[in-house]
Length: 233
Length: 174
Image 1 (cartoon, each protein chain N blue to C red):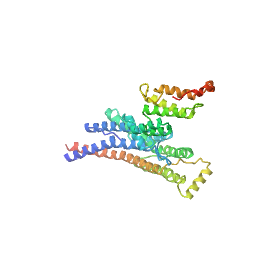
Image 2 (cartoon, rainbow over the protein chains, first blue to last red):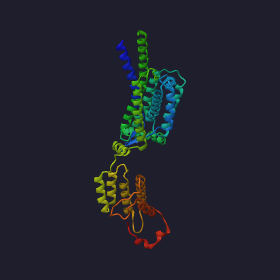
Image 3 (tube, rainbow over the protein chains, first blue to last red):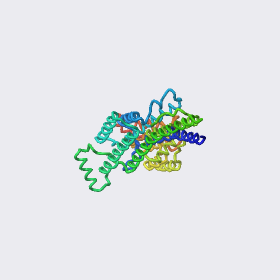
Image 4 (cartoon, one colour):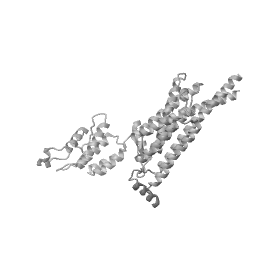
């Protein structure tokens, strides 16, 4: 009985740590690294703030989290909650919003036709998903695929195509694509470190989203144990 | 799913408050990074020193630059001063940088406009950084205040009929 209570308290503490300390730090780190690029010439840092389109995409994604029941707005921010809890929850939602915007920023080409092409694809996918039935797990899987595809296209395919220090075949194909499209598909070149940073950022973002799901499971377990112990006593 | 846990004991409330405070500090640091856009870890460290108020000019490099300046080696002096004040946050160093632009750009017949404009930028930076009217006590200089130097640089960048006066060749460098 006492062991169960101790386990329940520990779970409760761990859940609070994850929700109020770990999650905001993960999302803020994503917000920091999502806009970080490393210049290919001077290896200097470049900080790109989220563009307007990434903010729009982030709004759609957060709406999708609500629809997919990954976030329960009604219980997070409610009149019955203590004010500090409501403030903490609003803060988490804010960090999640900016992390989402910067996650998009990380995988979107910086400018030109490709930027708008990628943005349109994201917009189309997120808009369509607003009208499909989703649960939290399916939503997470779908997001992994969405961000994974965009990452592969930007940091593997495009970076390789327009690389200046690649093989002659790569440079030739890059020059052909550039000349056929009259430079409309040109992509800005960054140091390889940018790809690694983006990979880490997206990984961290997905881990953050999984932790949100995980914290839900703990809440359920806590509630079950609390109910059992109250019935026993 | 992220949802509220109704049972919030005291410890959890403390975790909430500490988490909120720590992450707010972290968020402020991120906003600062995006606002200042440092280009390397070294610049991040220098910027942090400026923000905290512990930033100091490298005095050894400053003195080396001053020696070069007195030998009329202005470009070399500026390079040293830029290294001494990497954050461009010391008004005295910025004053000397502006002065070196003035001396290098000064000519008996004409002034180098590019150098004077750069000097004007540096002296404006010095004025903005200084909380009180900036005065430099250096007996080797003829202008001791940033206001004097600024006026001289501004006059040099302005065009007037007085520029055609042949007696202007008799003017002296300050």
